[in-house]
Structures are given as C-alpha cells and as structure tokens.
Image (cartoon, rainbow, N blue to C red; front, top):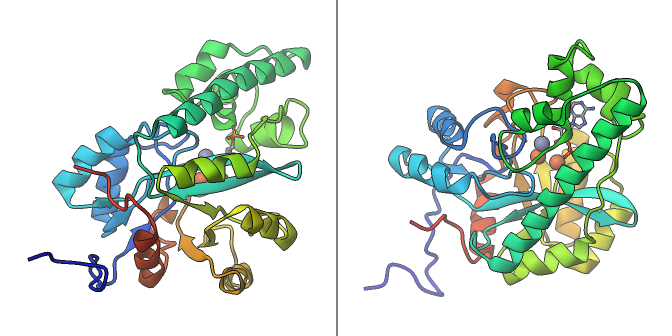
Length: 292
Ligand code: AMP
Ligand code: ZN
Ligand code: FE
Ligand code: FE
C-alpha cells in the first residue's frame, strides 16, 4: 500500500530542526562537507542544506556522512545574480544535483571567479602589494575562489594583520582592489533552477536590499525569501516575512555558517527556520532529498 499520495502528504508533520544556509570547504567555509554534517548531527539538526557558492561539489561526501549520522540533506547552492546592476545572492533548493544545464552554468561561474581572482591580484600589485596567486588557490582548496581566500593569502603574506582589514582596506566593494563579478541576470538562473526541479529564494534581503529589487525578482519568478538570517534583526525578519506573505512566497532561514569571519562559529544551527516553513519548502521541490 502506498504510504503517501496526492491526498496524504509523504512528509512527516513532526517539527524538524533545520539549517538551510551553510558553507563548506567546497566554497569558502572552514569545515569539510563530512565535518559540517557531523557538526549538524551534534547540534541536533535533522535537516541540512549545504549552500556553497557556485558549486554542489560538497554533496557526494556529505551524503555518505549524512546517511551514517541520520541527517537529511536538501540539495542547495548559493548563486550570485545581477538585478538592475545590483549583485544579489539567491539560494536554490531541491533541484536535481546532476542537472547538466545547471552544472554547466555553475562551471561558468567558477571559471569567472578564477579570472576575477587574477584581476584582484593584479590590482593589489598595482597598489604595491605582491601576492602569489598560487597561495590564493591553496587557501581556496577547491574549485571556488573567493575574496575570503584572497584575504587569507594576504594575511599569510603579512600584507594585513586581520582578515577584516583585508576587506576594509582592499577587497570590500568600495575598496581599491575590488573587482566586481559579472554575474548572469537573475531571470536566467531562475529559469535554470526551475528546469532542474528546484526553487529559488532571495538570500539575506535584510543586507542592504530594498523591496523594489525584491519585487523585480518576484516578477521574474522568485519562489521565496530568506527571513531568518544572522544579519537580520527582529524588524528585518518581520518586514521580510510580511513581504513574503504579501507575495505568497516560501520563507526560509539559516545561519550562513562559514566557520570564520562575519558569521561566527557558534551561529551554526542557531538560526533555525520555522518547521512549517521547511515542510512547505520540501513540498514545493522535485528533489527534497539527496538521492541515495
Ligand atoms: P566573493 O564571493 O568572492 O565576492 O566573496 C564574498 C564573501 O566574502 C562573502 O560570502 C563573505 O564570506 C566574505 N565577505 C564579504 N564582505 C566581507 C567583509 N566586509 N568582511 C569579511 N568578510 C566579507
Ligand atoms: Zn561565503
Ligand atoms: Fe550570501
Ligand atoms: Fe552564504
């Protein structure tokens, strides 16, 4: 007898502790994919999404640990897109991890990141600070090269005395070595994620984002808003929850755990989305679980 049907939901209605926004060494996080899953198990997190920037490379190894430790994994990724000349982060959830068109798009993102890191190293040289590109790649460990890896290489080379100073003096969006990324338009990535069976959520809108931009994304087919995030105060949470309700959008939350820097170590699992939000999200996607 089938355990679930169109009338009987497949998923358990019992509340689940979740963290839906996390990073590993596959992008710019401190913990390896199995290390992060272990941390989730220790913190009592039953549903985890790893949302590395521009890659899903964490999933094969994370999956093995997740099976062993009984943590449910939701496919995820964090994508940078352009909306009206603004650099916006989207979270994609519940898509087919092996979707070829999405894989090609992610590869293009990563290639552009390598070129951008070279441009930033050139800019630093122009400012009189020589940094070996090889050290940047060493800190990146994997395929996704980001400004945090450049900051680490600068720290290692003694060009700055703290990680934060690297951003303040050189790498921040208004600093002299900053090189913008040329990201695809939001509509393009929304379509790719939808075609792969997933949904898209506007990441941390409380960080300098106005509702006009968010409404443009909704018009393009955005599915949800990240309401709970360490950068959101209670007012931001209320504001974005209201925005989501007005547009009938999904709502999510997570710690944006990197293991260092802005969102400190103990943030992990502390920004849990409402279990009802998680249930609704899982019901809206074609691939709620990393297949076994
Ligand atoms: P990228 O993807 O290369 O543009 O780098 C973005 C990442 O850099 C973010 O996910 C943060 O982890 C980190 N970051 C951005 N701005 C700052 C800052 N002002 N201080 C520390 N870390 C930052
Ligand atoms: Zn990051
Ligand atoms: Fe982000
Ligand atoms: Fe993030």
